[in-house]
Length: 247
Image (cartoon, rainbow, N blue to C red):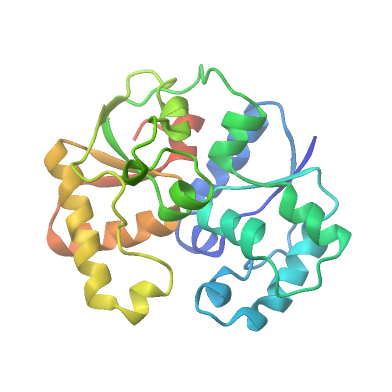
């Protein structure tokens, strides 16, 4: 496979280590990866805000950048959800359909496509709580939803359990939104902040040293809430742990 790597805006700007870890991890797993240098936003913020037509230029550029690849992989559930399910501000050509049908969030690509069964280089001797973003949980279905009462499953937990030394705790409300919600955190700042503080305190009270997530947008929001509320907890993207980060 020829893989096109997409790195979301907020990872590029604030969490470059997560983007680098994604590339290194895919290469460790023997994948042929390219990073188109003129990539920009996928258009999710505009679509998320109800300004669908304003996302057209970003979506068209995304297709020009990635249509030539067999698979498109990104360390973000929310961006994957936008490309796969809401990428409709532009005409639905064969190239657009190819991009939409072959875009994967990193966890599901590792779990479902590559079916990775070991990360021999990875060791993380810490206690972690897993945060599944609403996009990965309810749109991409990388884990079961407690509100449905369905048989439990978790693709990110399956991958993390293959890391040496890692320990897990579960908050009381594991599926609760952290309050980021893209532009929701701007338009409903007070509600968003309260939800974020509740989330990090729930993980901290469960005994987590780290909150790990496949979405840096949620990490960014929760990290800010934790710092302002004085909750002593750290944050890390799942790609960094699977790539061998120790702290």
